[in-house]
Image (cartoon, rainbow, N blue to C red):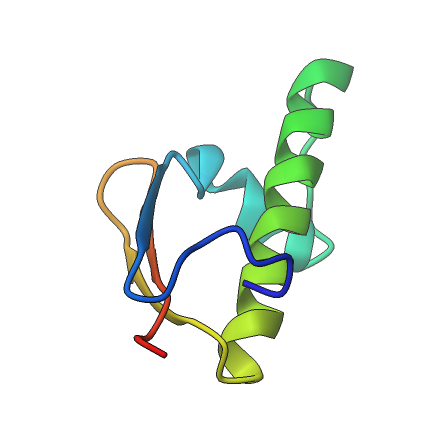
Length: 80
């Protein structure tokens, strides 16, 4: 990742990245009415997924999104 949080060959697995579908709804501009805490959580996860997507698009990491329940995202740093 751009902040060098993973060593070459390292992997990070993140759970609940879809957060009841709210991350996708927020990204689409169609966020339902939820509590302020839920909205803040969805926004933080959306920011995280956006940063990972930017690193993937730049070729710094490889990713795999598994839409199981609330979503699992695997992030792998290619070997140097």
